[in-house]
Length: 216
Image (tube, rainbow, N blue to C red; front, side):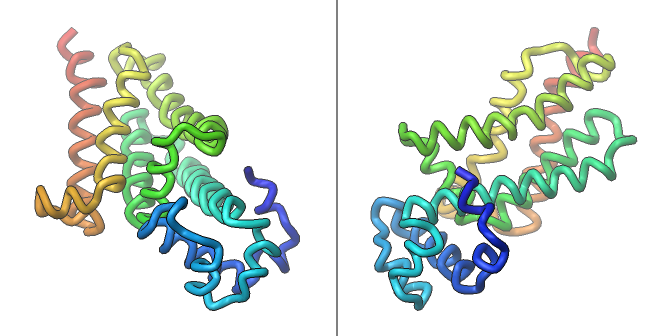
């Protein structure tokens, strides 16, 4: 994964390539990856089907570019934010990353769902995504947690437990937005829901990392 994004700029930034990616994201979200054909992508993008092979070497290549672009964009935004947050305490740094990720998922909802669905299936692609991106995602949160624990700001509890509880809250509404809408009558695409989710994750983290520490 990733090599297709390192093409010459005149190819990787071409408007036709962008239309193909947007069409594929829409169809993969609505029909699933396996339920979508290259011809359908071409029809949705209003391009010749041969251009999908030219730009991506096929449907698998389209999916890989969508996933790599999603994560690389997130990590780039995270790096930009990190420069502004050097003076924050560990808890505020953690909340800043939580906020960034919640709104990022909301703004890239179709790809967020697509990635989580693909990760639920045992495949070579899923293993590559977990190795290249999910472990990096975990690391970005883990280094803040470890910083807080080493500084005495956080209670020393297993980082994996904190991350599992936190990620469950962060990911579920964007993996199953229809369930959230139809059962709980909440709109995960709204600013209000995003702010509520950030506040809820904040309370969870506070109870795990600060409350038990304060009681000691």
